[in-house]
Amino acid sequence: MAGHVITFNAGSSSVKFALFSVDAGGIAQRAATGQVDGLGADAHFEAQAADGRILHDGRLRAGELRGHRDAFHAILALIGAEFAQMRLAAIGHRVVHGAMRFTASTAVDDAVLAQLRALVPLAPLHLPNNIAGIEAARSAFPGVPQVACFDTAFHSGHDFLREAYALPRSLYDAGIRRYGFHGLSYEYIAQRLAELSPREAAGRVIVAHLGNGASMCALRAGRSIDTTMGYSALDGLPMGTRCGAIDPGVLLYLVDTEGYDAARLSDLLYNESGLKGLSGISHDMRELEASGDPRAGEAIAYFCARIRREAGALAASLGGLDAFVFTGGIGEHSARVRAAVLAELGWLGIAFDADAAAQRDERGDRVISAPGSPVSAWVIATDEEATIARHALRIARAFAPT
Image 1: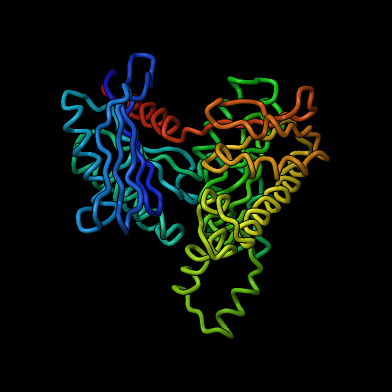
Image 2: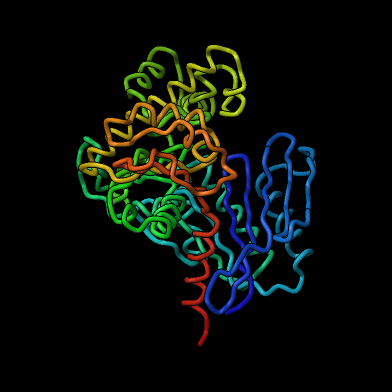
C-alpha cells in the first residue's frame, strides 16, 4: 500500500497537520507539515514542503478563518492543490479522550463518530475540534479510511490503585476514573528512547511532557504505569492556562460563596489559571522568561516546583529511576526550566550538568546529565504526528482488500 497519510492534531486554538509518504515498508518520510494557530483571533496558517518550499505563510483575519472547521478545510484544500496526484492510504486524527470505550486506535464509522460525540463532556475544549476534523476529512476524501488515535489509550491497563479515586465504587464502575493524556507523545518517546538507549528504555523512566498542556508519565519497560493527569486534562501539573491539581474544597467554596456556576468554573479552570493566572502576564513560557516582572519569575518557579514534586511521586510508583526525559515545547526549548528541575533532583540520582542542560534544541535528542550520572537525563523531541501516522497506516492496511 504505497501512497500518503495525513495526520491531524487539533488543540483548543490550533490545528497541526503532517503529510507522510508511504512505501511498502510503512511510513517513509514527511512530505509536508504545518499548522493553523491563533484560532478565534487573527489566525496564522503556515505550511512547508519537505524540500523547504513554503506552501503557505500568512496571517488570516478572523472573518476568513472563523474556527477549527474552517482551518481543516483550508488545510485539506492546500494539500489537495499541492499534492494533486497523491493517493491517500489513510487519514489519522488525534482524539483526546477515549474513556473506557476506546483503548486503542480505531477506524471511524458512523457508530464510532456517534460515540465520540457522546464523550464531548469529558473534554469539551478538545473533542469537538477532533470531531470537526474527522467530519471535514470524511467530506473531502470520502472512501479514505479515517482513524481515531486516542491520547488516553497508551495509559489503558493501569491497575486499580492508580486508576481509582476514593469515591463510591459505583462511580468508578460508571467511568469516573483516572485516564491520563498525552499518550501519543509518551508512546513516541518510549519508542525513541529504545532506539537511543535500550538499557534505559527497558528500565524505569519518567517523561515530562511540558507545554501549554503539561503532564508527566512513569514508564516501566516502555509501558505507562502511572501519570499525573486524571479524569480530565485539568489534573496534575499547572499548565499554560489550566490550574492542575486543586483542592476540591476551593471549588465548593466558589460555588457556595462566590456564586460560580459550571460555565464560570470551567472558564476559570481551563482558561484563566495556570501560568497565565499565576503571573497575570501570559500563558507563554517564552514571554514569562523574557519578563522582568517578579510575578513571571514566581510563576516559573511554581511550575518547576510542581514538576519536582510529581517526579518524586512517580519515582515512588516506579520504585526508583533510571532515566528522566524532557519533551514538549517547554521541555525541549526551555533551558531555564530544565535547569530548575534537575538542579534539585540529585536525590533521585541525577547528576546535574548545567552546561549540558543549557544546550539549545538544535543539538537534537541528547543526554543532559553529567557523564557517569547514575540516572540519565534527556531531551527528546516528541513526534505525535509520526505516532498517529503509524497507527493510521496499520489500521488501514488491516482493512485493505487482499
